[in-house]
Amino acid sequence: MRNTPDKLLRSEATRQRATFLELFLDLVFVFALTRISARLIADFTDGQRGVYAGLGQALLLFLALWAIWSVTVWSTSWLDPNAPIVQTVIIMTLIGAMTMAVAVPHGFGARASLFAITLVTLQIGRVVFFHVAGHGRPDPQQSIRILFWFGLSAPLWVVGGLVDDGTVRGTLWTLAVLTDYTGLYFGWPTPRLGAQRLGVQMIAAEHLAERYQQFLLIALGEAIFVIGLAFSGSEFHTDQTGGFVLALASTVLLWRIYFHVAGGMLGAAVDRSGNPARLATDMAFAHMLMIAGIVLTGVGFELFITEPLGHLPATWLIAIFGGPALFLAGRSALEYQVFGRVSRSRLAALLAFGLLIPPALHLRPLTAGAVAAVVLLGVAGADARRSRHRSPETPTPPY
Image: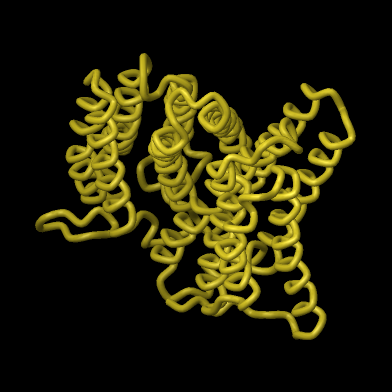
């Protein structure tokens, strides 16, 4: 039976677990993360683009892909993912995101126009399809808001993709990303219509929480892929084996820190929040930081597995220390969003990473990786001690 527009919204009976089609979509983003990671590894090792330029470019490509995934997740946490219209949009997203992921290795070069035009076509095309196929429902004004903001960023993306000057491209795409994320964060405020975040009417909290958790696991899976690829291509010497074991242990620590305790209580936090749409938005930004940190940490794994006892360039600490620090910054933000406070151990770890940079410049890559793992172990140990001495916590979102 054909779904009418009124049946697009989730109902009490709608399953809150992610559908198989949504999980299928995630496979595309696994590939996208591997392409971004490969770009960064090349930037840290061959120096053709330069580390800082490469980091900036990879960040812009990552943010564009993350915006697509985030809007998709909010939509399927508000609309019924089993509705044919919604499923069609997910398939459109899968095709568009895969095209963008393929363009990532040369996303600031020969394939910049492909990346930009696909992004703009996907973002605008999804909104137009929803509006037309759904006969203006469930919220025609929201379509106008989103199209207004995409209309502001689209020329920046397209022109940036077509110009030959890398500096101009970077400037235009930076403005485009700032425009897109300003709209996302503030609910696409539009003249005469005001602002309204996606899903303000009703959010399937369990579904939204599960999708964030799944994407973070995807990022950890990408880090494991990097570890395995780096070690399988090595000579299996003792020092490289040590780097392999250290990287796996660090990945387990990242998993442990995320899911203890806030990472496992996202659904309950959204349910208890007085402003679930705002909390969902803030959680998206916290997870964005954590996932970017995991990808950068994976780059650090590659560096100290392949060159464990070589010279440590100062820029390598951006990955070896900066990746875990970025993850902890995002995890601290998530803890505040769930419990309304931040553990001292996480703040102390962030301070430790900053203070350890000068002495770490004189270490070997493998030793620097071990130092980062010890800091993460300290956070995980503090979490374990708190759980033994405190009663189970209840989410208390600050808003």
